[in-house]
Every structure is written in C-alpha cells, then in structure tokens.
Length: 109
Image (tube, rainbow, N blue to C red; front, top):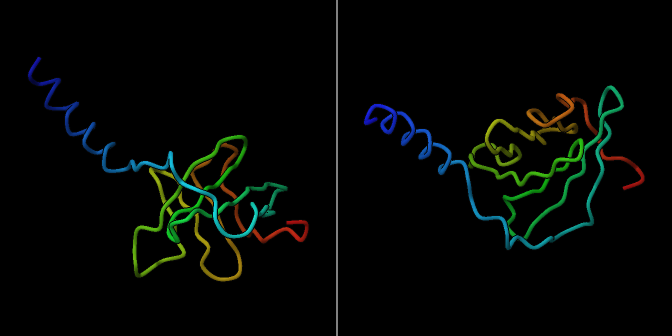
C-alpha cells in the first residue's frame, strides 16, 4: 500500500505543476483567429488578459496554453501540447487530429 502511494504522489505533484487556474481568464485582444495549416487542418487562437496565455481550439478541443520560457516567448505549452508561433508560420502539436504544420493566419479571420 505504501509503495502505491509513493508512486502516485509524485504523479499527482507532476500534474499539479502543469495546471493553472484559467477559469477567470477574460478574452482580450483581437477576436478569435483561424489558422490554416498543411493537410487542410486548422486551429483557432484567442488571446487572454495575460500576455503569456492563449486559448487554442483544434478538432473540437479547447486548451489554454502558456508561454513558459522567457527566452522563447512565442512558444506556448501545456502538458504535451505545444504551440510554436516563432517566425512567419505557426505549428501546433499534441492536439486531437494530429500535428498542424506550416500554419498561417486565414485571410477570413
């Protein structure tokens, strides 16, 4: 029994490190923007009051991601999801529907 607890407790702590309260996040900035990617894949991006927090929606799943590294402020992560907005194209990995690469802001956004 003690052995199980010692394995589960670190896992719970790890999960706690990857969470933050986004329930009160208020949309800020431009309206949601759609990005078109290779393979006819898309994702929608919204900004929140905090400059380093974004909401990304892909294949019906919405997730709030956060810039975690000051040296790479255009890379947002949460768990296994990474949104990289470095350069002129964006990429999104870890969301349902597979990776989205060579993504550009849709003109209709």
